[in-house]
Structure formats: structure tokens, C-alpha cells
Length: 442
Ligand SMILES: [Zn+2]
Image 1 (spheres, rainbow, N blue to C red):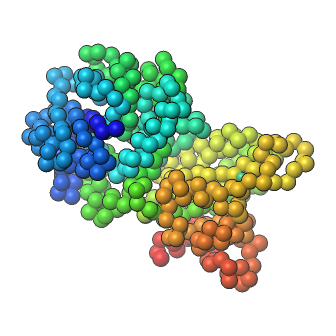
Image 2 (image 1 turned 90 degrees about the vertical axis):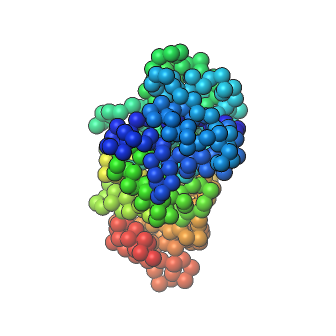
Image 3 (image 1 turned 90 degrees about the horizontal axis):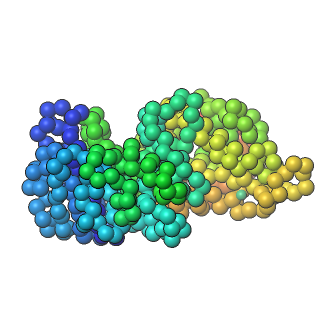
């Protein structure tokens, strides 16, 4: 794929006086116009042709880009006569877009490994013949006032959950982002000459007409809009501090692996009802601190309740929705949730035989951790494991990462520190917040 579309028609209405004079796409981030970051990102991933759809103050963008040669790209600016919405604008470029193309927005700063996204899209296209597009989704720290998607276990988008959300809704923290790979099939679903937005109109309408039309691409990479002066300041800070440069999955980042029961939520023993799931004190604060650092926050949890027949696999997913909702309400997000539904001991009443197997994922084995390492390009050597039991400490030992035990849940009572610490580096802390503070101070 070598063609991208940047929708840069946005008015800077929330940006004050400056937004009236400069299009959002040209607002400076650490001294460089936002659009230049996007063009550099596209160039570095082998893109050749870029169509920029302009409207508000479009002549400034045209002047800035020229024909694109100074960015090593071929750029064409197409100006809309009428503000047609995001989808309407892309429809006006239909004749140029005869193969799959990437869409991004002129008011977003992103650091994304586009190669991974495109490879994912290519795999999904083979799997789902009806695919119209791949939409990037990510966890953010304010999911309840964001548009969300519901995704199946094989990445199909089941529904678009547009805000406002009911306070009773438990959801996965899968926030729609303005980054898509679309096939030309999309044009069948965009009305001609009328106002239409992708998020509000075209994607939900397409999904209603054509099942299995979209897949979600989950990414914890850096994707932020600069729609308000406050967000503009935030992204400026992230670029200047160097944080922004490290946030693509092309670069290795360390993780803090977290056990679930007894570390994040109250230990109740075989938790299998969502109503029993309660966050421990200060957990959201602890995970927020991880989110503000260079570490990923990744849950690694044994859930033999599935194998034991106490609940279904989907019930565990539902409990995780509650976990992400409660954390999201307090501004915290998880970059990955991995759980093992298996249990090796057979022959109990009510058990679910399908899951009664000796697997590679059940802790203290490292299968889940290895999957996370692969999917998030984690730097294992700089990572930590936080847990409340010997099984977690053994997992950390097997993965060769230092273990930080907490006094909540099982409280690491089954660990004889003196005899274990020869094999596994162990530190004990009162709770997750103290454990995280300890790790981040190092
Ligand atoms: Zn397993």
C-alpha cells in the first residue's frame, strides 16, 4: 500500500484566536507543523502518494506542502467546496482511490508502526472476504466520554458504541481512533453530495448493511488529538521530553506485568460473578502512574474458574469489561489483558472438559507473558512482575524478570523469601501503588 489520505479540513474552533488564522494541521508541535510529523511518518513507512483534503484555510496547507517533493512524497491537495464531513470529503477523492488506502486526520499526532497495521489488515482481508476496512482502536484515560467499539475475539467489530454511554454499561476500553485502512468498497456506503461522517454515519450504517465489514486493530501506541489548547500543550510536552519518539511498537518498551485477583481487585476466591469484582484502594492511581511512564500495564491472570465450570469464557470477558470500566472512570487504562482459562486436574463434577488441559499459559508457565512480549514488542529485560503469591513469583523467575510481591490478596504468605530470593529477585511492598512507586523510582 502506498496511498494515504489526510483529512485536514477541521476548523480550529476550540483553539481560540490562533485557530482562526492557522489550520489545525499546521499548528506547531515543538516548533514543527503537525502535518510534517504525519508526512514524515508516511514517508518512513514507504508511502508515496498523499491526498490532503482541505477546507478551512486550505490555501495555507497547499502552500506548505507544494507538490510534496521536499518531503519525498507526491502530494495533492483537494479542496472541498462544501464541508461534507469526513466521509463526504473522502468521497470527493474517489476517482484517485482505486486500491486500499490509509486514512488519517490532520489534527492528530501519532507515533504508530504502520507496517504492523498494514500487515494486520492484509491478514484480515484474507480471513474476511466481506471486509470493508480496518479501524485502529486504543485504550485511553477517558473512555466514558469517547466513542467505543465492541469487538469479537477474532477482531470483528460487533457494534459501535457512540457516546454518551449509559452509566450502567460495562465496556472494554476500545476507543475509536482516527486511523483507518479502507478498501475501495467503502465508497458504496458513502452517499454522494451530502454531509456524512465516518464515525457517526458511514461505519455504523455499513455494519448494519454488511455483517463482518470491519475489524478493529488494537494498539496502545501514541495517538492524540490536539483539539484543545490543553491537549496541544500536552503533546508539545510529550514531543519535547522525548516520550513521543518512543511510543511506536517499532521500539521496545518495558512492561509491568500484573496479576489480577488480590493485586488489582479484592481476592474472593474463584471470582466468577461481576458483582464480586471490586478494585482495591489506590489501584487506579497505581495504574495511572504506569500509564504516565514508559511502561506498559499488562494483566497476566490464571482464571481456572472456566475449566472448573464455575463460569464461561465469555463471563470472564464480562468481568474484564467491569475491570476496564472501573479503571477508566478513574483515568487508568490497561495495555493488555491475558488470562488462562485452563486447569490441568481432571475428574471433578461440573468441570468444563474443553479447558481441563495441561496448557502452556497457566502460571507459573510463561505462555501468556511470551504472547504479550510478542504482541507489544516488550523489553523483557527491563520489565517487572507484581503478584501476591508464590505462583506469581515463580512465573517472574521463569521469565527472568524481578518480582515485586504485594501484601494484598494472598499477601505472598506462601513465599519463603529467604530460600526463594537466591533464584528470584524479590521485593515485598504493601500494595500495588507502593509496588509501582518502587519500580518507577528505580
Ligand atoms: Zn492455559
